[in-house]
Image (tube, rainbow, N blue to C red; front, side):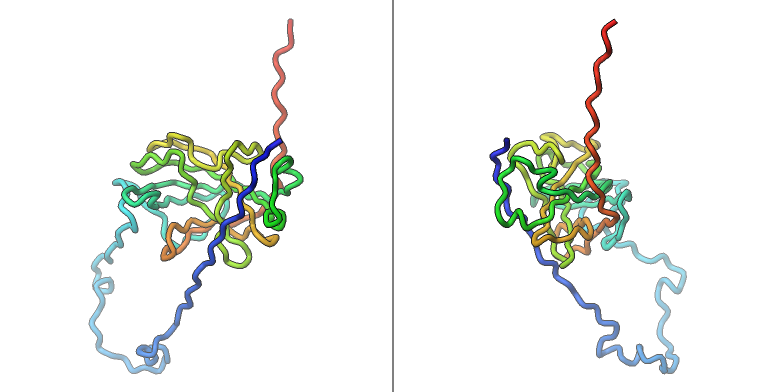
Length: 231
């Protein structure tokens, strides 16, 4: 019987930016009736190699970060960087393996649930993460959110004790460079919310990398293996 009290789900409203197809200064260029002009040829048109943008954070040599704004399917991988603390950079290869919707009755028997918790929909996100950087990320939360049907970012719920149906929800005490770990994260989507996508968005300015796919029922527990019969 667990006496742990579930924390309220944390959520952050996404800032939505509207892109203008034509600015006031460029109306003539949008009309399609322009007369040809003798404008200088760009460097790319002249056969020169276009400049390559540097990564948004410093990463080890040979590591190529996935493009911001990438939209991936469950089962696909991305290489991402973030700052778990101000003076450090973490680099992860993340594969979102499976999305699951469960129920409190099925997975939270014995846990004390607040009224807000009971209004939420519980989800599990299973992922495989590899430390591709130079920082030990031991004991830190996995930097993934879910996005609900109202474009709200929801943080994973953290537990003070082991939550058997979905564990671990953070990196082990030691997670050095090169180590790979399968993780399971628990999310409570408020107001019976949906799980639309999994999101990596370390800052407000970052164009998020997202994963989406079918949300399944949790897999049944595998029966424990029986010992060898006595001979």
